[in-house]
Length: 434
Ligand SMILES: Cc1ncc(COP(=O)(O)O)c(C=O)c1O
Image (cartoon, rainbow, N blue to C red; front, side, top):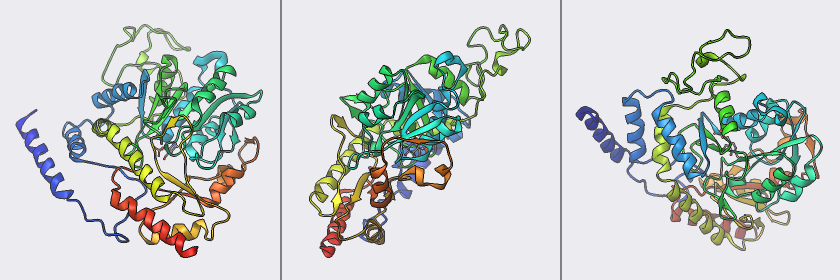
């Protein structure tokens, strides 16, 4: 490293220490965010170093992150994207690739998903001309069950895409087995659950593909960013092609002849020897992330285990602190799982002497941030009313979530003092209504 660069980075370290003096927590005044990024000196230095090196497109840091993250999540391949939503779009779109032959999904085929969740878990189904089949979820775990998924399988069902809700695994081993038995693809939306396990095995490692988000609310961040993980090298090639404009070639930018046949292909009706770098075998996108994002991802990844542990600790403290409070249905881990919590969900029960809105307003008034369980019942949103879909069973719990559920934060920057203020505020509110 040049002396001048080292000097600049030393200044960045100094600046970081100046800029990040811990602020005193003042109950009722200091904002307690439900989620947020934890950015430390190493993160700031990595970002500035990537900028100093002018690593503005995807390059060495992106490749390094992809292999480190794939290793961490025990998958053979990870493909970095510009968001978790893009990762979902790529994963579902990959299933429609002609490369899969008879296994490919075709317009009108059905994909099972849950009604209560995040919209961009579901949108790629519709964006690919496929039909979402919605099932309900349980309260407390906020996940669906293998039984519900089994009931939803019909003659046109070809795939399943479900998110591990708020970091809590769904019954992924059983649902993966259903997928095998019925020759369905399974995509795990692991955007909120990095590090969670089911039967001791990492979520994201059961399905054909898994997706992750690196938006600041998530377990590790790149600002914006996401990832598709798979151990199926055929699917990995399709994802890469779709991500990178649809090209057939797999040379990295700046690389020229990795396939050793760059000018020796004949594809489509192109003339023989047409430059492989410019042969397009998919109708693709450009959903790549940059090296500046990946540089941040690498420093964040080094802290992932600590982040996950802090989230678990905060969740437990909230759970113990709120145990037995009347009118609140508290969250529970799915049996046989160890969640990597994203948030702490609370459902106000029908017999409560207060409404969800009243409790939410009270907490917001105390600067304790609350969030809805994303969209609630998606089928009730204007965007989906006229979209083709099927509902199996009823969506009673999804409706309860729409009306009665919210979540509060567990992210690593929350201190014990903040968590205790959150629990004492909720108890105070409930006692005043008792
Ligand atoms: C379950 C789930 N899937 C997908 C996404 C989309 O990720 P991104 O915001 O990176 O597009 C989110 C976002 O929070 C999410 O919670």
